[in-house]
Length: 330
Image (cartoon, rainbow, N blue to C red; front, side, top):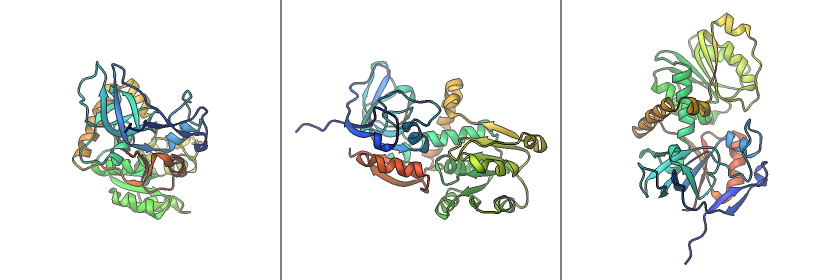
């Protein structure tokens, strides 16, 4: 009996999930510098859906297969690739191509999967945790004993920041919009949580930190959340801008002056381009911590590949406590 052809989610025009269809797609053998991966799970983030819809700041060429992170098993190795063997369990991250049963990916973006993680967990691990580590350690200089306020604490990078902040010895306050996400933040190691929709949000944050300002804000939310969060900083505080799905905020420039505070951008993609050695070292660190069981993503739901539209809609809504993952039938 002939094996079924591998499939991929593809569109000829960027747009909503309805633009995409599941088609037969065999990527063929890998090039000399590639690894062919039989994908077992692919993470879906807000940015994945935004990119697929043509709303991201950089638009991919079409036809386009979405997906920026996956986990699976090595099927074939390019002639110039070393360090991998057929059958290795691996993770990979990139820009598109991973809502599929199989993909050929540059060997430089492929890593061995932490043994402590499932395929679904591993698929959503590298990007979120590398982003949070880069933000808190490289950009924010978070120290043990400082206070970290995490906006969107039940989301992808927010939950990673909660776990990493706790590991680094900070007091972690998680802000999230519903009870399930706040419960998840507590499970991830937050010392206290506040309701992101509370009318007295700033007072709640201050009360959670014994009446003091916070040292670092991790902000993957933007919009109306940014201004009050920046105002919650203590002297010499650092506000880390990770993303702005809620919109781009306008911040009065007298605030950094009055607080001696810093507004700091975090771009994990460009960090990898401009500082590849540090980026690789960071990933070595977080993968080791995952193997030790100290870092672990939370999965809200998994969907089979043929239910990709429902999965993309779920991820775009941002209401899940934990990550949304596509799984193949392999």
